[in-house]
Amino acid sequence: MTARTTTEAARDIPEATVARLPVYLRALISLADRNIAVCSSEELAAAAGVNSAKLRKDLSYLGSYGTRGVGYDVDYLRYQIAREIGGTQEWPVVIVGIGNLGQALANFSGFRSRGFRIVALLDADQRLRGHEVAGIPVRPFRELPAIVDEHQVAIGVISVPAAAAQDVADAMVKAGISSILNFAPTVLSVPPGVDVRKVDLSIELQILAYHESRKAQATEEESVEAIDGEVEVSVKGASA
Amino acid sequence: MTARTTTEAARDIPEATVARLPVYLRALISLADRNIAVCSSEELAAAAGVNSAKLRKDLSYLGSYGTRGVGYDVDYLRYQIAREIGGTQEWPVVIVGIGNLGQALANFSGFRSRGFRIVALLDADQRLRGHEVAGIPVRPFRELPAIVDEHQVAIGVISVPAAAAQDVADAMVKAGISSILNFAPTVLSVPPGVDVRKVDLSIELQILAYHESRKAQATEEESVEAIDGEVEVSVKGASA
DNA sequence: TAGATTGTTAATCGATTAACAATC
DNA sequence: TAGATTGTTAATCGATTAACAATC
Image 1 (cartoon, each protein chain N blue to C red):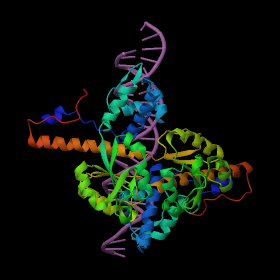
Image 2: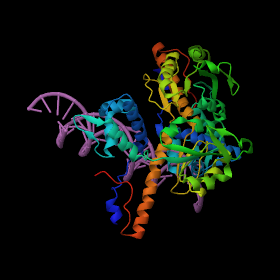
Image 3: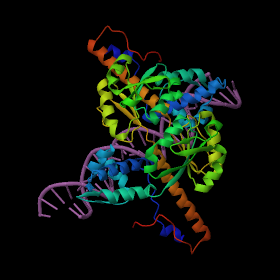
Image 4: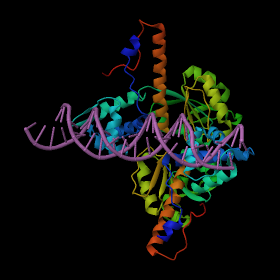
C-alpha cells in the first residue's frame, strides 16, 4: 500500500490525448530546432495541427508545465512529454516479415530517432538467409523466442502476408511480446493484456475514396442546381 | 431542387462508421471466399473484430439490408457496402516519392484488389529515371499536372521525406488532387475541400510504448504489493 | 406459433470546444 | 498595474453499448 501512495496517482490519460502526445513532441522538437525557447499554446497548436483549446486540455492531463501570461518552455515541455510517453528510454523492436514493406520499415530512420531500436529482422523464407537489410541480418523466424528473451523485446512489428499474421502474432505473444504493430490486413486475436495497433494502407485509401465520391456528387448537385431544371439526374441512384 | 429530391437523401454517415465499413467489407469477402452465403451480425462482427451492437448500428446508416430472424446475405451486403464507399469504381492514384516506402507501396497488391490503380510513380531524383518499380516506370515529379489531368487522378500518396512533403502537397492540390494520403511525418496544410489522411509509423509505435511503460509499472506495483512493505519505490517518480 | 435476429431507441460514455477565472 | 496566456469548467457534440420491440 505504501507503493500506491508513493507512486504517482497514475492519472489516466484519455486515449485520444495519448495519440496526440507524439505529435506535440514532434512539433516541440521542430520548434527547438529553430531555436525557439518559448511558445504559446496557440503557436504549438498551430505547429501540431490542432486547436489551442484541445492542446491545453491535453497538456493539463500531464500537469501544469506552462506559465500563465508567458507560454511553455519548449525544452522543458518536450522533456515532460517524452518522459510521459516513455520516449526517454530505448525500446527494442523486432520486425517479422522482410518483404517490401518490412524492408522499408527496417530502413525507416524515424524509428531509431524516436527511441526504437530494431534488434532483429525475422523471416521464415529460407531465401532471405544471409541477406542484410539496413545493416541488420535477416534471421530465421524460429529464433524469435531467443531474441525476445535476449533483448527483452516488448514490441513486435508484423509485416507478413495476411494469411501468416495470426501465427506470427501467436508466436510473438508466446515469446513474451505484449505490444504488436500489425501491417497485415487481418484481424488479430490476442489474449488480454496484449496491445495491438493496426496500420491498414488500403483502408486509409478507401476512407479517402468514400469522401471523394461524396465530393463528386456534391459538385454534380451544385451544377444541377446552377443549371436548375432539365438535366441528367445525378449518380448515386438506386435504393429506396 | 429537383435534383435534391431525386438524389438519395444523402444520409451522412458518422466518421467512425465510415472508417469501419472497409473492415466489414473485407470480412464479408473473407466469408464469401469460404462459401458462406448468409451470416448473422454476431458472426460478421466477430470476423471484423467489433461487437455486434456496433456492427448493426453501423449498417443501419446504410439502410436495412438484413433479414430479421435470419441475418445478412453476404454477397448482397458486400455489394451495398462496396457501393457506399465507392469501391465499385476504379480510382486512379499517383505515388510521389519512390524511396523504400514508396517502392513498398507500389508493390502492395492490396491497392489494386480494392479498386485503386497506380497510374504513375513520381520522384524528383534524377537517378531514378528509367527505373521501373512493380512494372511502373518512375517519372519526373514535374510531370504531375499532366498525369493528373490525363488520368483524372483524385487521390495522391506522399512518401517523400518530411522536408519535401508540403511542397508536394501544394503541387498536388494545384494539379487538382483533392484527397491525399500522407506518410511523411509532418503536418500538411491544405485548402478547404482537400482531405488529408496521415499514416505515421513512429507515432503508432510511440502509442504502443506509452501503454507498454504503463504495463511495466503496473507489474512493479503488483510485486511491490505482494512483498508488501520495505521495497525500492517504483519508477514513475518525480512531479508533484 | 416459437425461436431467432435485426433495426432502433435510449442511456452512457468519452472527446471537443468555448469561455473565463486564475495568475504570471 | 495592464496585458497576456494558461489551466479548468461547463456545455456540446459524437460514439458506444445494452436492451428490446419489430418482424422474419
